[in-house]
Length: 146
Image (cartoon, rainbow, N blue to C red; front, top):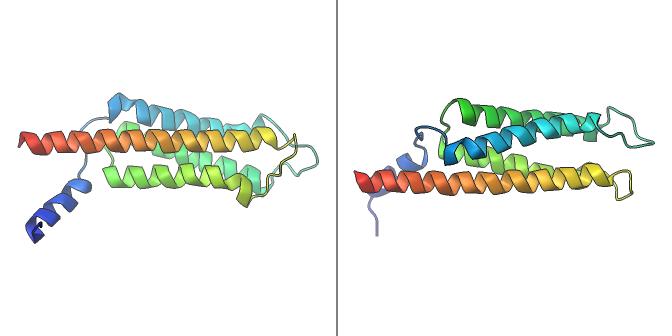
């Protein structure tokens, strides 16, 4: 059984800033690139019969911009492990669910946008998990060295 001091130390480590980029910047770079891709994707294909500035298109531009900002933030300064993980999971999860929430449809016109959002969402979730595991391992190694 752990005491209050050990729990407090564990919680402090969970919110500790990590020095340098995690997994040599790979997580941050992938997040940044996929964010730019999602933000630009509404301009690459237009679904026939829909208004160009529909809610789905705004969603892709806004969530792509948010993922881009997350990637830039992770590249330019160390983020708190929990903060970066939560932001990445929320963004990836939203991308996976957004085709259903915004009713992209299942016709051939909607297929590129649906596949794009789901695959990018899964990728963001995967690299976020990879970054989290790597960061936790780095924190554990730092704790063991002390």
